[in-house]
Amino acid sequence: MLSLLRAALLSLGCVGAAWAQSAPEAASAPAAAPAVESAAPASTPATAAAPAMPGVKSANIFEIGPDAAADPGYANQTNGERNRVQPGNNAPMWRAVGGGVTGYSSLPKSEAPEAGNLIQPMVQYPGSRFTSAGEAWRQVRNHWLLPYGAALLGIVVLALAILFFTSGPLGHKEPKDTARPIERFTPFERAAHWVNAAAFVALAISGLTMAFGKFFLQPVLGLHLAGWLTYALKYVHNFVGPAFAVSLLVVILTFIKDNFASLADFTWLRKLGGMFSHEQVPSHRFNAGEKGIFWWAVTIPGLIVVASGLVLNKLVPGLEYLRGDMQIAHMIHLTAGLFMMALMIGHIYMGTVGMYGAYSAMKTGYVSEEWAREHHQLWYDDIVAGKIPAQRSGQSAPDPVPPTPAGSTT
Image 1 (tube, rainbow, N blue to C red):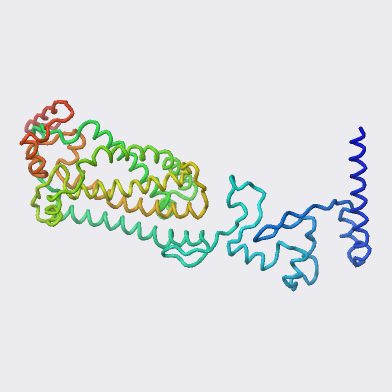
Image 2 (image 1 turned 30 degrees about the horizontal axis):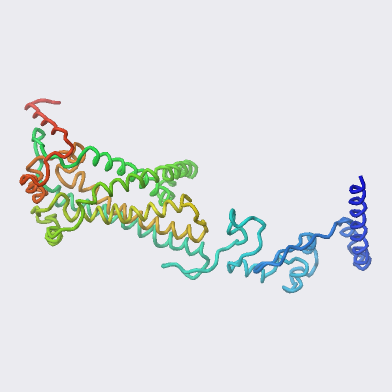
């Protein structure tokens, strides 16, 4: 009871002291503003000012005149005069904010490391002006990565279309009843390939939609439907990403042993793989072009895409996710992703309509002796010599498809 009585007396003393200090100021105020004075509470307790911090200084909200704008000379006040009546509303303060200064925030650094920073510091990324980091990122993305990335993908598609209609597929088309006793891909290799391929297609479609959807989807579907589709694909992108990362590591570990360079690869590169001469260049299990796809379209950009994607998804433990770091990770992610997609378009072309028998080899796992001799003669020679088993998984080769009788409609 005594402690409660002592606290009450102390509170009354503080209120009286505050009223006594404010009384002279009220008496000396102009008589033209009695309504404003009567509206202000006389018993507002004094609030301790926040400790001084570097950069933008904190201010006691009870000491800032909320009616300062009613002064007839408000618009003509100097920065010094404005700083006395409204410390947080003057040109030097906002110039400091625009320059990237960090002020005080009561939020803990561990949860909000940039809470006291409104505008990022000035930087200059390749292709941008010297400006705030957020604006520099926007300039690089909108003025360089998106337009030139779209041009790269368009050029690749156009070049492959010209190649197909002028030269046609490589190799020779085999009858359906051709025996295929040589196992080119085991069931495990095919499973790893198709899982990774499915994840890549999902990521490519969702990523292209997020990057370019407002240009080709929004005019067709409208703002709301295109927005919801992009929002849904964003979650597809985020959740399929880890599956792509795991399957990518499996693919790399599975195929790396057959993708190191050999002397035969230099001959293949010198003759461009016989793409224009239609002369097949001898190669091992994978030719120089396929090895280039493995390293420069799958392994290197794939690991970069996965690493930057983990940062963007905030899945790297112990990393402080600042805006500038996320913007750099996004630019790296977008660049590597567009480069990877451009090369993978060529891989998809060669694996489907660009070469006879390539899609069937990955679908069934088996190829004919003629196909192996024509496209990978050195690999076929090793199989004939017994250096490489014709069937590596222990499964028997599939039976040939019987020919379709003449005149049949099936």
